[in-house]
Image (spheres, rainbow, N blue to C red):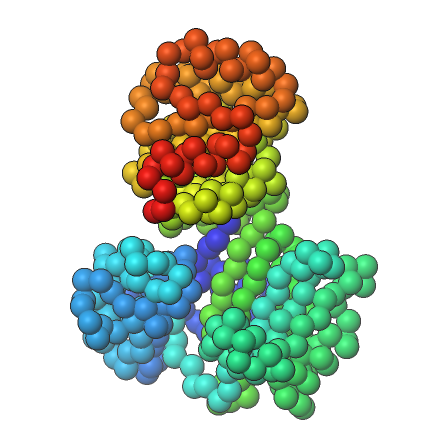
Length: 399
């Protein structure tokens, strides 16, 4: 689960992490009022959407040459001007895609005098099953760009959960950022607080870009991007309450109600599969034959007919879907249950695109009989390769 920058900074502040003072605003007058609470004289007006690259983005409605989604203001009147241009308009960044995201909230923050900028992030390293730090002197840039252009400027290390943060971790960060004296001490303290916040709140990723040294010699987190392990939210109700469903795909929200693993993609072939590995293989073979999947959808090993019907409805709700491939290998999952769920859904929502069904495993013959007896215009497939070719041909090949 992702949260907004202002929420992320609130979480970090509760752990003693230094962040600039700022306030949330949802309308133009509110933006001015929030700026009046800040010391000034310089303010930063930040669009709040779940996407990076806001500063380099542009607003659809403002045309070419429009300012981005993060702007400096040197007066309260200018804060209001920026708010008027941002609120209710669509910000397009490298991470939103061409459709962009509507800005409904602003974060008005006190301006900072920047001496240096750094990059610092924490994430779960699956290779080591530990929390890893990624540190670089190249703050303000995308970490992918840094890794490609100047990989020698990136330091990574992991923390043993049995020991937690130790003094040498703080020293490693200070050395990588070329900090000494009081700033090195601040770096050590900051590293410990970030690690504590990360583990205490079951974060998946915490990115500070940039981490700055201010003119008065203080380390501050000028930006913060945080995501959480959705499986752990039951023990963090305060975090769950921060969820902004307006920033999420409506189909993904609906899928979560039925405990379905669903992710929207850009292709034209809808997929319904049981098992994450098989779902990935299904998407791969669709791409191999020249088309693109419209989604990742794992109905799970013990799905009911109700869940299958819900999954089918979610797929057909996507206007980009030109064909559907159902690929089930029944172990715990029974093929007859899948067949019943599909028939129920088709009868409710109709079938206007080609549907290829490949069933194998438990009760496969019963499942095939149920579909055959339904009178539905279903294209049967013998195996995954056969199924992929048939659905790609049915939708006309390449997207």
